[in-house]
Image (cartoon, rainbow, N blue to C red; front, side, top):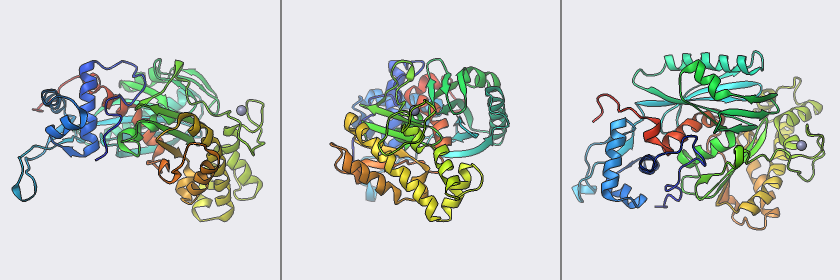
Length: 410
Ligand SMILES: [Zn+2]
């Protein structure tokens, strides 16, 4: 059984409100239970290095909060071995909410505590100004919550988006594609919903989701690349996601990439975002007659039919992403590199092109087949990113996030 390398660390770099030591320790126990599906108290102690007494205390707290539940007592095969009571994450009591802000739509979603998206709705922008987009998202969220099982309480709302986001202040500092600057998204959504709101960049949020529910569960150092309408990166060292001052880490949009001469909004040519982001693919698809309207979803639909020209566009992108990833991999030397690129889902063979480029150009990355992988959350990445912001907070600081004991819990 692989050891949970990051269990000792919170999934996020700098939670807005730092967890108390007791809550951080309860979070370690909660993540151990999540990662094992169901696990006995003695096994939790062995996996986490916490004392049996500490584990027993934290399990009682987590049961009291309704975050975990006890399963019927079991023994080993054929009734042998000491009886034990497995503990599992309780998925019935709570949901987390998420709002992902992008162009040309927002995504609103609900997630259970095992990372399953239980409801999700895409909302095309009526107008792209912050007030309209956020108000529309709040209305849809209210509808989704009204349709949820009555027993599941919303524990808070996560907001994820591209561009520069500052989790500490809850402000979207800059999103060039949306044209937003210094928008207090946390305050605005808290006003509409009455929920606690946490904000983060979507690449960091997806990395948090990979650590909790996906491919990064047993990896301490991870590089995550997000390739969509915007391009950004996130990385975790020793299990902790790096934010840097004002959470500006991961801004790779204007990294020069060899083999591209696309003009960039910054005035230069050959920047990564200009070379691989969705508007560029759409422009090329229009030029090559693959689509008639400048709509990325049209290109995806054509690609889904197996169209060779559309496939070639996504293949070119995979090569450029691999080219850009290689020096990042050399600098960070991560155990795992995860790429969120919708083209990898449409054409699974394009991951081979990306890996080949990394293999050729990286000085340190040997085993690309196992260390460079596509996202765990293909087809649900935006909803997962949004909800992950809050669920990561919950798993890092369970006692601070769910402060009131649930009625009827033992
Ligand atoms: Zn640029």
